[in-house]
Image (cartoon, rainbow, N blue to C red; front, side, top):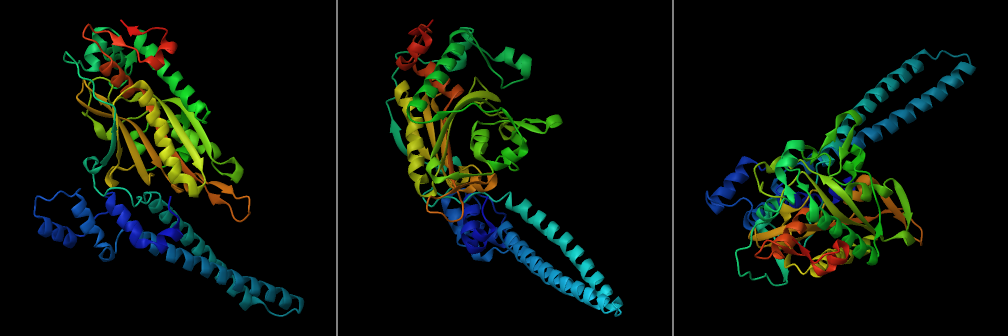
Length: 459
């Protein structure tokens, strides 16, 4: 989360950042200005419109940010009043003691103390209500968008920063993965739906072995690059989900076990990042670099009817995740290093891919900056996202209370956290199957996976 002090001191920047994310409701007069300036057919996600709105920051006085500032002012007033009344009550209580020793009448002072006690009780209730409302609004304020992010309210405004590898030219029409694998009885979507519903695929035979090989290969590669392997729980409590920013915003996308008040993890990022929650680390311990393999569970509540064929969009899938806890001054260099670690897997698999910087409106709630890696799918005819590499700066660390103390001393500071998929399994499988297919329906096993598979070809 953002600190209240930061919000107080940087009100316009916080509001502008929310506009970049499309996170502000605008008054009718400003909406009319937009329509007049850009015509009725304006694209509300376009950089031009968003930058125009950012220019109106000073005119917006009823934003969530302004509500926070007002509540904070009132909260501090209440705290000051509480302190004043407590001091007066304590002074009067001492006076009562002195008068009682002198056998003087204390009735008036006792009544005055009771009056102060009543005021204190009322102020305590108001303070708790004010703090509760303040926290509820703070929980919905997203991270600040990094200045290097392209402005735009949807994914189409992201910028491609590089393309790596050449798309394979086939002498036949490449099949999409679901046709190829279902024909060979290696992918079973109907059986998965029978057991669990749509979005729960079953792999068998050599495709199940290929996924296992991929996981082993990725873990081995990242461990060789200095990441510590960690195995984490797949069910976590709400405090853990809150720490990484999944709650409250993404609650509808989570699978929840009500009886135990636990959530199925949407990514290993959640438990791994919280490994050091509510702890103070020594500076010498940083950076901490973890790699974890886990299943991921996502309801995908907002994507009903999208990309339902094959295994492109599923509710349960496996993923190798990288998480870093680093010194604040190193976090942007660490993001580039994280991106390189994720890219290396695709380079080794000899799969064509591209890297994008996400536009402001496409960022996750907690991210300050994010790169997406997309691998080429010849059967589907487009690029598929297989990794998001994000820097959250101190946003998650504040929510999870992960701090460190420098060797030079001073107050503990919040670490910076980063994470990246390296990689998500289903779409990496899609890319391998579709890029390495042959006309006879067999699939070549990428060279780096052959020692794990003990075969060169999936027949």
